[in-house]
Length: 488
Image 1: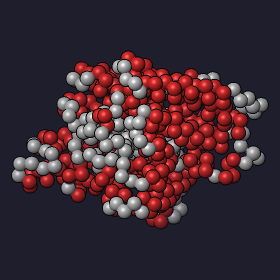
Image 2: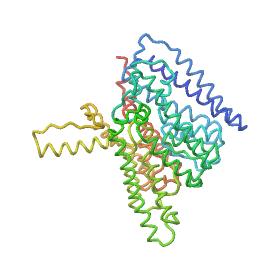
Image 3: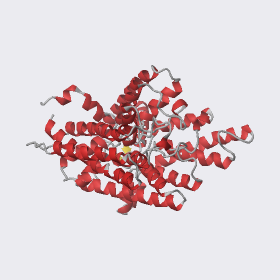
Image 4: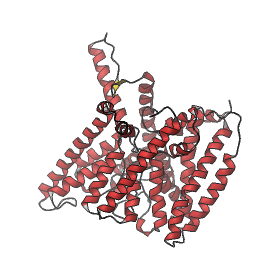
């Protein structure tokens, strides 16, 4: 392990967080909110500490895969700790563990919260809270690479942070790939902000919700999430969530007018099909409940409302955004079961969404089919293809290992969380919501609930799950390995 290169890069990223904290600081100054001081001190301290660490020199500047994983995992934890300071220092969050939980939830775009009264926060902290979603959505280190000098070794960092079974550069240079990603991401965010303003949402609300939608995070600035906004705004956010849940390579192909390659995007088409099938099934379940209840069911007054909320909530959960237009805890068992299933599937690889990812689900399905065919035709040799390309054995192996590690962490987390004594639905969906970066679950952690009542131990398990889920497990496990830290 090259400790100096790790410290050098972490220093650069701490300095970056300090610079990012300047924006909410300026908002606090403009709105004359006293909390700007805590933001300013945190920003200044981060810039100073980051500059000192980044000044550490090393003869060997190569970033190997091991260093790439460690830098990635450490930075996400450090960002969460530093980002939590303004919440704790201002007294808006009394426990530092809770403050770290809230900030880790923001950066990992989970959207799980411990706040009982989110509307009590000053606007500068509400903005910072939503801004963490946008920063973490495309990736903290990808953001840094867009403005730093390019290196072939930096691909090891991009692979460690980017979601999906395999990561490819859009163009030969890593820096150019990062610039393209953030360019598309920024333009789409701006379009979403403008659309929400035109639809009647206040400017500040539009910015915060657009940042949360772009990062597929789901932090709202009101107690009822986005339920109090009009249906046009809710519809725009539905479309936005689905668009940010798509692999960003697709948008690059559109820009480059490579329409034939778009037609081969098996993952995107599967993603859309799963969304519509799940939404229709949930709609049937909710409409059936509405029809049998007479005049009112789970917040619905008409069949149209039932369908509208069903399509919104499936998009919110499948893209792992976590916004809510109503409490789907009140729904019947069947629609809630569908919601839990899409929680695990998640969005596309290469998107800002979480979950296992649609591409992995496709590979697992094709592996089962291939295995069955091998029993029927023992002499046949068939490769697994995705988007018209043969999936390498290494990708299949890492995909399978990911699932094993995912299951082990999920089960271990569930056992620890169950010691808190909550019902199984609450405990199970709390772990599901954090490891898949979704936000709300069912029971106490449903859309109208929060994670405040869990113990400190359980909250740290959730923090671990959120970061491990966002980084797709391996960087965190490698960071925690004793062998990783040996000099040779």
